[in-house]
Amino acid sequence: MTENGLKILVVDDESIVIRSCEIVLKGAGYHMEGALGGREAILKMEKERYDLVFTDLKMPEVDGITLIRWLRNSRPDTGIVILTGYPSQDTIKEALGLGIIDYVPKPFTPAVLLDVTRRAVQWLETRKPGAFAISAEMSSPAEPVRDDFPPAMAAELDKVIAHYKHIPGSLIPVLQRAQEMIGWLPVAALKRVSKGMNIPAAEVHSVVSFYSFFTMKPRGDHNIRVCLGTACYVKRAEEILRNLKEGLGIGVGEVTPDRKFSLEEVRCLGACGLAPVVVVDHDTFGGIDPKNSMEIVEKYR
Ligand code: FES
Image (cartoon, rainbow, N blue to C red; front, side):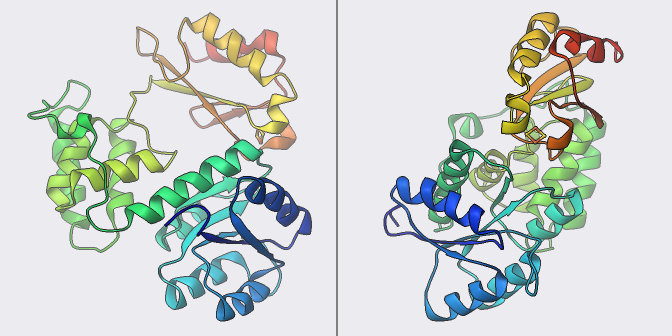
């Protein structure tokens, strides 16, 4: 499958979104068409084959979830990406349960749309058996269980694996549970999941590296996420990030030596009206003055 041979359908009830996707995707050489809603999309797909469908969720008549269900039944080989403004965790979980590849948060930048599209194309290609690339990290022999993955957690993870191992399509919930327990996904945990669920290590690794909500990097007791999405960026989010890096003495993706804080940058937290936004654990801070960035963090010391 080549990028040029790939056919993409963008489904959204806002023509401006379709137009924006057209400018970006067609500009990058993709074959893309648009449909103004789920109903129009189904009519188009009854006549033509599309490899990848980007769909909004909230649409009149036939909404995104209904469209995804239809695709799963009638066009099971089609890759699906959701394109949505404020996805709740439940909506994302429901969509993941229906087998979506990823989601693009609105508003999106051309770079984000192209990045997700490229990864979706890779995903479609890797669906072919034997096409998963085994990373050197995963294939290294005898990886010990690390201190940050203690035996008690391993036993707990084994229980989760035992519960899910015969349920088809349950790799993502198992990985989610593992990340909730450990805080991140060390290689040892991935190997344990791979072995316990009898899923090739490369496939487990591929899923973890594909979904942005999984992390293979350790997090501190408090995880700080700085939004660099468009709305936050224009309100000096970069300055906030710079001040946090300086104040904590770490870079993005790193943890402070006392393991208290970790720092991440994200593309949109779905709270653009509060821009610029920083989230510490589950607490959202909006309208931040960059010079007060460290004051937020100090509360968690
Ligand atoms: S751009 Fe949406 S929350 Fe920052």
